[in-house]
Length: 226
Image 1 (cartoon, rainbow, N blue to C red):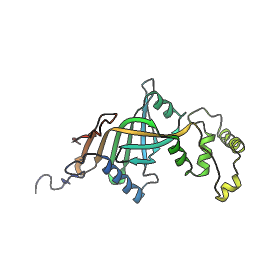
Image 2: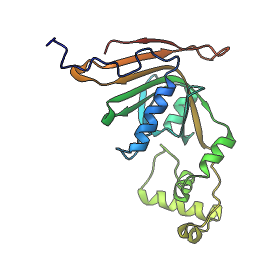
Image 3: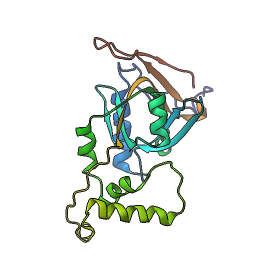
Image 4: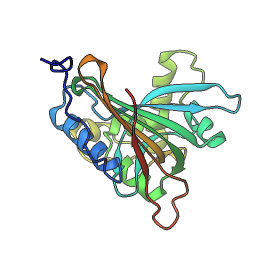
């Protein structure tokens, strides 16, 4: 018996790394979503840096992933802390972590707003309570009390003339998207995929490319020490 017979020595990422990390990332996300071992398998940490150089991080939800373009989309209030920091510094980092699968994906890239049409289409799919909440909440701003938040929601119900009785019955109600709410697209410049293994001899690889992408320039890739 050799020293490493007790270890998993087979590559957990493809032995020959693919040209792009995104097909693997898309497959990992699809598997996590299908098995639903956690309530939000599309949850990811978003890290931003403000004008003062102070980093901040929070959890957001990945709403779409484009394996061809190498992009990830999330939605938020543009007036939130993360919205202000993105406007000041559009370079961000994302982390997916699927503990049950011993998998992690780290993404670094630049942010751009999605189109109004894309944002409107997604906003229309949200439950009416969340659409109303987007109007009522001035995200990240001081709040006198929790009651004040519900009072703001009531004011918006009247202002937007929302038929709450119809909404509660499950009938369609028209609640437009606030102009300060929408989506951001992260264009990846660096992606690191990590797959846990025995003895902490994990399988880890990184893909990098220049932004903006010119003439379909590809990724550079290499395996990393765990």
